[in-house]
Length: 243
Image: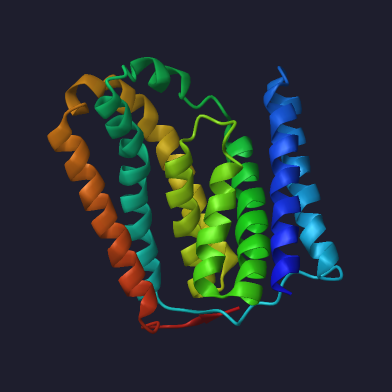
């Protein structure tokens, strides 16, 4: 069983890498976007097919108000960490990052952001992370799915480390709550917030490109994500939501 799951993961990752490589070479934005979604669909069908046409089994959902608050705290922390780690890395390497920031301005419309978020959460969390958890356990479900999520972003401007951290946080939210809607909302909140903050970030880049600000933001962000983990580890408080 263990060997089979690793073979499945290898094939799954290979499909994504090969497919995303070709989509990255396409010049038409919309054609590339829909091909990108199609590749994720094919990869997802691979695992669903192995599961005999069904989504991997999951436990019932049980969440409370405190967990909603915890997720918001964690995503705020993730936004700080994922956006400032690349700044720190380039600063340590002595690379001027202004050019990279300009190319990273988001010109995608909301329908693109929403469709990508939905497909990624269903594929990488509801299907992939759940499949790994069922076969290998909770921790491996988080870390392995996060690693594959990061590898899948190799042809994008998203840093591999940032994508890995984000993948781990979204996987933790999903696997801890067993609620795909929560991870979708968290991911969408992250994407949209980054969308609106990027121009502000660029406009004030010279003022925030200081070690004290960068390191402080990363440490605070890590603290907020740790706080989210502590909150989600507690039993739900308040009115529970079952799914």
